[in-house]
View 1 (cartoon, rainbow, N blue to C red):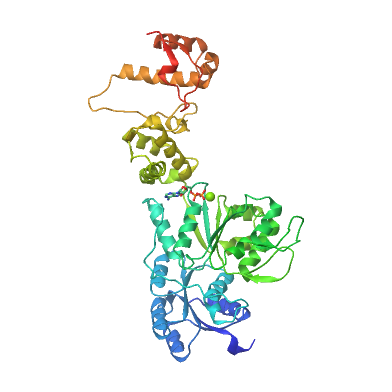
View 2: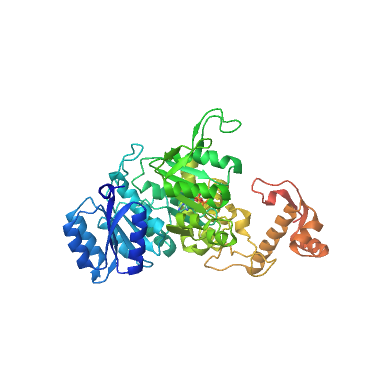
Length: 489
Ligand SMILES: Nc1ncnc2c1ncn2[C@@H]1O[C@H](COP(=O)(O)OP(=O)(O)O)[C@@H](O)[C@H]1O
Ligand SMILES: [Mg+2]
């Protein structure tokens, strides 16, 4: 390639090793790279030459890299500038993007990531094998929309800051979090706040398909590529062209396909199954996982190079039990959503219901909470306030992990004027016994075992409580109601 055809990049960085190795890598990737360590040197070079790109660190030997960025963009408004920052200087990065940088990378970063970041914006100056118009932001920065994301805990605020930052970029995003923590919602939010928002968002779940089908689904296939391939088909990568490809549960990609995925990300081209003709693709990839990929890398079940390629920007979604302060807002959000969906008039949550929701551990995270609220809205019938009894049983009486066998007790109601302790306790006792009897289908021996009582103690209690007979039919809620019990009293 002649030098005139090469894209030119100026690297301004205080770190000699970083600068040299990056320049070398860029040269061998087909760029022409110049380097300098100081802001003064960078300015004089920029005065003398219109580079295609600038890779500048926020910290230079004699000053602020962001000032150099400003100068460069004032002089050459169309220059593609990429800012690097050391880990922890995310605020610099926010400022950089606001001032017009097209991207930023946090160090330490792989050389491949740098080439990738430089190539995406610069590629529009080079002829590409297929006419693809450049993807450009259509709205100014500062218009981030958090979509449906509810939550004000510190973890959620940090998340929103990160999302605002990464959404406009081309970078790959890796979202890690337990199931139900909102990974797909986050991926959609990134897409909707990106310059690609008017293009398709294509979701692909690597775990939902048998291994043999994953490849054809992701990369497409030609007619006759395998038995049953009666016509050729476009893969998800192609379907997401100019848009975003969301690869869910990326950890379950078989090893053989991890290599192909890596290639697609690196070369930005795919081959449909049954042919070796490469097709250029331009899809931003967002991947999600509920297992720790670093652990898989250590175990040798996930490719390290693919991990680095995906992990350009990492977003961690904490489990709901670690952000309890978000529960009330989320619960109210879901109550409103569920009432609207079912066409019922608005409802509120009672104090004790909220307390119950906050105390529960939510193993299924936000999706679990959403389902519990839907259940509660349905069970609360006509009443405007959702009381504890409307909640699913597992939320009401969770087994405490502190004392094995003991139910975590939620005090149902504490009136100002006080209570009759003895009769309240009798009521609680009665309810627990009746529920377990119901669960045991009326079998006293089984109920006694569930309650960790002897059969004779249970019979004594039943007599004292005046319960003589229990019907074995289960009410719609799965809870026993007093009408299904004959009382001697
Ligand atoms: N922060 C949030 N605010 C409001 N709703 C949320 C939030 N996070 C998740 N949800 C909702 O919870 C459900 C599960 O989220 P999802 O993105 O499918 O989780 P995951 O992909 O991690 O399993 C979805 O209905 C989603 O809209
Ligand atoms: Mg999901």
